[in-house]
Image (cartoon, rainbow, N blue to C red; front, side, top):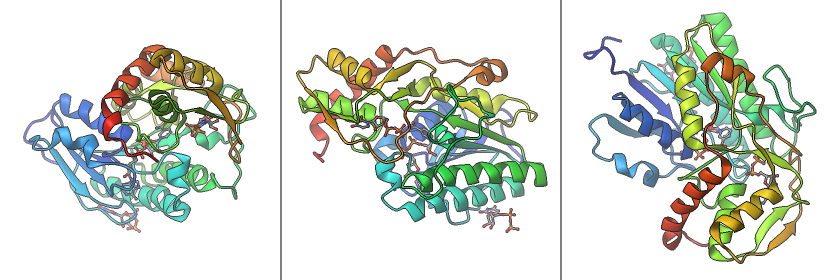
Length: 323
Ligand code: NAD
Ligand code: UDP
Ligand code: UDP
């Protein structure tokens, strides 16, 4: 595409009204690029991008990626997909369609434009992993017919499509596997553990620990994650990924609950609830590749990131609808 200003790119971000997408857009606009955000607002909200209203380089399109999209851009970030179990299990068929048809449409768009395309894949492609921590060459342990399969298998199929377009059409692809991420603009009621615990703690409600709380997760603060995205997109076209992006610091869910109580000064009690089906027992990224190929590693400790996220939810609490 011919551009007026060489360094300014026009960039499409699908799912840009969501948690991660809106932070990515902030960084891209800060760098001076033009951004088109395509989002059907299924889980994202206009609130996440309302501060960009009237920004001369920002454009919002209400669009469902399961339908073709004809725009002229220099780069594509494909983030559109509900990400939390409550959201992606609400309409599982639509979740698979979003991952698979969405990938086909965005890859078709990238093929027509001969432009670079980024895929937000997930640590869920490893399923309930039998290898720990998970390196990218681990193929995973995924149930193909369970309640999480629409998300896990949809994302796996999207990766397959990315690598087939790369092999078959020589497309310039960038695939990252994102591990649990948290920060401001997380949806307060999507059931994810960090937002659940913070909102429960701030309201003085019981903190709901699923199972015995000994399962582990590794939590990455959103700013670190977005930095990883940008570095991945800047690599030369020999780097396709998949590359894990996440924070290797591993915590049990019980530890997370205790830290949240401590940082909020809450009097909430811990209560135990049944563990959801197929809930992975442990998850920790091996980020050797990201360190080598992107010179990237997270810089924000859990305590610092949680403090910032708690500040965000404190401000928003009065307007949050009880669920
Ligand atoms: P999110 O739900 O906040 O954002 C997803 C966005 O996609 C929303 O704005 C939603 O409205 C939009 N969307 C959903 N279906 C769509 C469709 N058919 N057409 C157009 N837009 C659609 O979730 P998030 O946490 O920001 O996740 C963004 C991406 O990162 C997702 O692809 C997710 O799978 C991936 N990811 C996130 C995490 C995490 O911890 N947040 C972990 C792994 C992978
Ligand atoms: N597509 C799109 N925008 C474009 C080009 C293609 O949304 O600018 C969609 C189109 O719906 C098509 C899909 O991408 O079905 C895959 O395109 P591709 O060229 O790979 O396949 P084909 O058009 O041959 O089916
Ligand atoms: N979890 C929990 N209490 C909650 C929400 C989640 O104990 O209120 C647990 C959940 O069972 C899982 C972990 O926290 O073991 C992370 O859950 P989340 O849905 O945030 O992410 P994912 O399971 O997709 O990694």
